[in-house]
Image 1: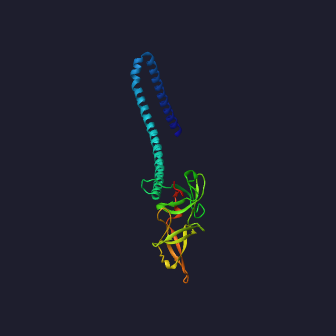
Image 2: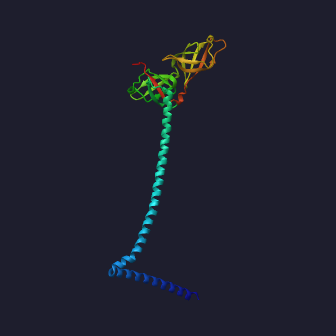
Image 3: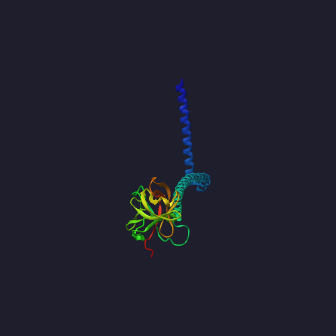
Length: 264
């Protein structure tokens, strides 16, 4: 009983499709004949259709352009975000460098008497109590030149030099000795390098040196190099050993100033 129904329904749908197709063919034939027989009438009838097609094309183009513009704006935004991140990182690097320079040479306008150099390697990258700096013979660095850091604190001297680099041996290097004085009474001492940036020195017990007393080395004015952190002495000894901590942390140095041994 179902098969005759589906056959009737299929036949009806096929008939409707053929009728619609015949209608479209008739419309096409009509407009074709009208175009050749009465061109002006053809233009009059086809103008609204063409306008509708033009409007649809324009709207479609705008929609597609909107998608393209959105993609372009997204790409530009991502590029600007990356650029802003890079500039922020560069600004932080420059700010840190300015801080180091200001700490090293101050904010006064007189020219710096020495040669400012970046530290390329420091302990533990370099052997303990040595530094590698990025200035050498071309910049005027010579063996024996004094090396100092922020506030004019001396830390060592140039031991080897090449065209564009030099090696600094710190006063705290083992077997290194430096003349100095300690305390407000300026008791003369000989600083002995103990390694790791620290020093030792021996003084008579009668000098009354106390923990916290400053240690200075000769040079251009009074140059602090460290302070006493401990006193070691045997009960019957006539001398005591000073344990001296440096004024700066050699493991965090980024810039130094080289003072020529001979000032022109």
